[in-house]
Length: 232
Image (tube, rainbow, N blue to C red):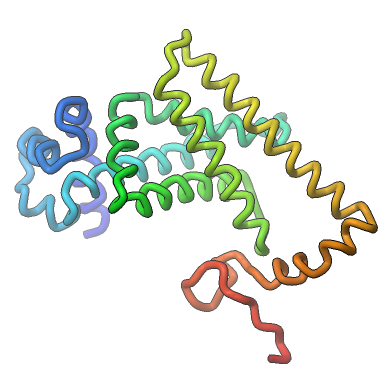
């Protein structure tokens, strides 16, 4: 049943692309895609209950799945880790291809009632990137890595949407600068850890942060909860 649902949603997204430029990620687009695919609209609603919104969400997740496959097929062994991150962000944007479809989705997820969904999708993409590239962090760094990359990814997508340079070269230059900023921040964090005075000043905050664990290490499905010590 799950494979059938996934195949149905994939087909609808593919069929919807030619309609999105005119009607956005809307219920009208979903109905048109159903007609093109000869799929009963009531059946489609079983798997996409929020209509066009769920269609846009699924389109984004299809892009994430394609990125996972691309990272698995690529030989990135000779790249520095920062270059692997840059490569993955660029590849995810290139997978999207259709700027108008992304622009329409961005507008949809910017609506107040959909903002949480849009933020979650960006976070999910960045989680895909970190996880596929072998991130093993289980503490607060799990969150800071994804939060920082979410800011980079989100701003780069917005830059790309307005980019008219040949082959989007201005976007890739912008991405390089943003990744360089992140690396400077990581370098600063390492300097703080290595500095005895600063590390003592940070001992209190660090003690608190050490109590935070990545969601996959928790026994309940609530990310960012406090980790209990064995004696409490």
